[in-house]
Length: 218
Image (cartoon, rainbow, N blue to C red):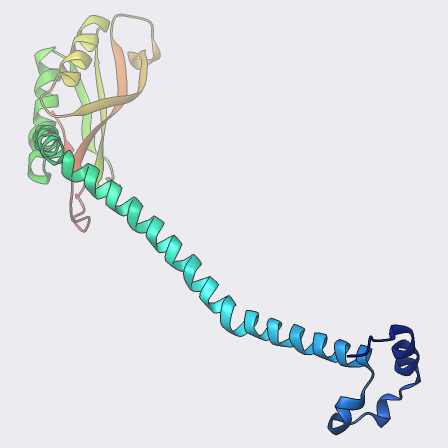
């Protein structure tokens, strides 16, 4: 086989007119042209194989790796839950007991009038004069309903303080807010007027029950 004269081949390549080339006469093309065409064909085939064959497989492999990691995480979580299942069950039982205790401290819709009576009895027990103890509009929340109560009583300072203490210690959950203390009739003296808002809470799984407003007068 004769050695290739690359200088001569380069001159032949420069003299070729692309419009005169024919694939039927490819065997007579200059070596450089044949090498160039073969290189372009190889690149096209390699690109097509990468795009149509290797790329989809690579994506499937990546998705499989991601799925494996997800399954590993789920397995670790469930294995931990299974290993700690007795402890979790005990904690759930404890939470159920605590939840039941707290719910028992919330008055039901039918027990709110009895709560008003308890507050009225606490005021009368301290010999206070009751201006009003009445329900305000309830406020609905995602898991419970807040029931405000507007209270105004009058008497001396120590009896008012004892009344507040008794209301706060009622077996039902009652919180006290917005205290206002002023002399009765706007004059200095022993008689004071106490205005405040108390709030109790009702657990309502179904929020379609709306408490009606009412009032308790002495």
